[in-house]
Amino acid sequence: MTPGLPPASPACQRLSPRARVGGVLLALGALAFALGRGGSGESVAPPGIQAPPPMLSAAGWTDAVPHFARGWVSPPAHTPSVHGSSLCALPSGDLLAIWYGGSREGGIDVALYTSRLPAASGSWTTPRLEMDRVMAQQELDRVIKKVGNAVIFPDPRGLLWMVFVSVSVGGWSGSALNVRTSADEGRTWSSSERLTLNPFLNLSTLVRNKPIFARDGRIGLPVYHEMAAKFPQILWLTPGADGRLADYRVRNLLGQAGLIQPALVPLDENRVLMLLRDRSADRLMRLALSQDAGWTWSEARHTDLPNPDAAVDGLRLRDGRILIVYNHASRSRENLRLAVSSDQGRTWRAGAVIEETPWEEYSYPTLAEDRQGRIHLTYTWRRERICHVSFNIAWLDQRSLAQDRANSP
Amino acid sequence: MVGFYVSAVVLLLWAGLAAAGRRLAPHGFTLWRRLLLGLVAAGLAFLPLGGVPLWMRAFSFHSNPSLPLLGLGLVAWARVVLERDWFGSADWLALWGFGAAAGTVLYLHSLVATDLDMYFWGWERGLAASALGALAVLSIAGGLRAGLLLVAALAAFGLDALESRNAWDYVIDPFYWLLSLGMLAAIWLRAARRARRLGPTAAVHR
Image 1 (cartoon, rainbow over the protein chains, first blue to last red):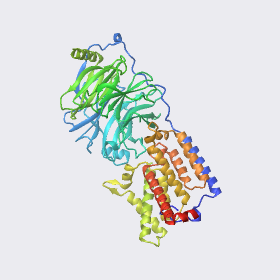
Image 2: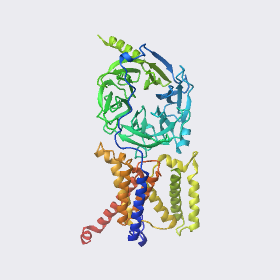
Image 3: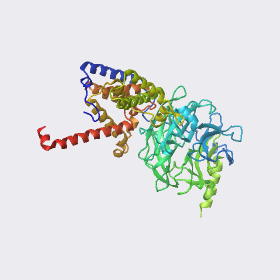
Image 4: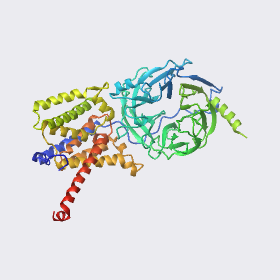
């Protein structure tokens, strides 16, 4: 007899033979139903990723005059504290940035804001409140303590996606991800949907960087797990014909322990580079390579670039090189620099210094390229504002040459 | 999905109230009073605590309760409200054994096999549904009523009744796992204590 339970009455002994036949038929019916419903997700490697923008030779490059500009996405004192911006180029040519702001990181008044840089204009629009904890609570039918990191990106069909972090229990390691979509470039949004990505109370999945797009329509979004063991993950989202999320699944990269906030850089139709934030004592940026469109990954190896346990981002340039933006320090986030690799991440050439002030913080950079091939960078400026920098390859090369001269004995 | 969850919360509250009522009134409640407790439970589920209904607080913390856990709630409800025992000893043992085994495999396998990701296979609908179906058929063919909870899990998985789309979440959750481990430990302790009380001679004679 089981503890705490009275003796079983004859009626609750084993099923009768007739009941067994009925139960088995019921089970087979449920099985047929579950199999019939099917699913649109795939558990195999994608058949390649969407090719990056076509490469241009130096001769074919038209934007030969160095260009560099700096501005602000968020107005002064819009909120006391801002962080975690994400940026994307929209099909219309506009740029859209998202970040979170409030009294402090993790505060209950923190909200997600977006601002738009219209293609025909030189200034960012007034920030628009997109999501706060009360809105998230209403859309997700649960208690929300705070919202955090968000990414936005258009898929190849033009549908705009927003994936954002919310916390119901505990701190950031209690995070879960939510997704919403927009068919009008972020002017209106669908209701948010909670993603279940972890078997243990769905705790601790966060997002930071932009995705890759598979040729079969799937979206490979780099995410990461932070509770107890820390490791990167790839969240594969399958869009439905109706423009909403049809299916999803997450692949844990358990072999990359201690590394978080993966940033993906497509090299060609099959190979993808992953840059990783290092939480280990080594404090060196790590790289992993996928040869099958982001499905499986090599073991992460050290680069010779330092990483002060801070987010990095990367972009494949139109001439085939890789551009990264990172904090060039082992302990602090007091500078923000560019570096370029011509050999797919094996070696790096120092580029321009974007920011450098002792004891200040410049962090969480994000890169995007517009239709003209100009590169845009947004980042957290001293936790006070979101800064926007734009430049072109000609400027990048000019500054790299200057850096080489400065470094030569 | 939310409706399913609210129903489960009401059912569990109802079982809890009825169990408490049975302790207060040892001779039992009339059927009407027991049904009235159901209405009270429904009211409690929507009672705002700090501006948030009770069911929503539960949902915030545990949005994917497994079907066996909900089934346990239903069996408890049947016992205290309908005064019917639906499960026998073999069913309970199977239920605790399944919960302990499935939870240990899912939550702890990565300590041993660091590259294995069991949870990922729960998204493979065909594989997951077939495995669940086979387990349900085997347990029912063996005469276990507890197998019906696996049928319910399979049907719920087909209907996407939970927020999760992963089959594992339909059969196991941390609370069911911990409860199963605790109940198995209690069964083992009770058996060990009884064996010690009977002594080695009695054990040989048995």
